[in-house]
Figure 1 (cartoon, rainbow, N blue to C red):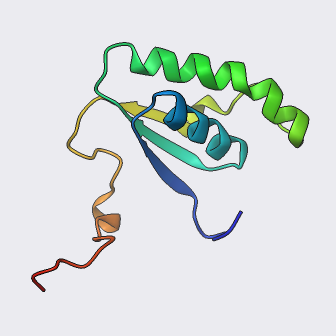
Figure 2 (figure 1 turned 90 degrees about the vertical axis):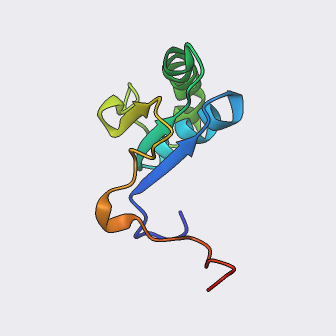
Length: 96
């Protein structure tokens, strides 16, 4: 994966596309912090990752089960996935 120094990612929204990316990120060994305020979103995400895992395992060697410890889920919109040391802006403020 490009950027070998990337170890943690956030998935904002865990519908079909966000859940797909979460499964790929976990398969690549990344720690994923997922967030979605929708009712049932965490259940959908975990079921989606579990269902996608066998297909991902056919593409490259993976453990039998997804690394659930590497996945955290948040319903809050207060950005709980950002550690204080990583709260840098991705885009400069236009008024700067």
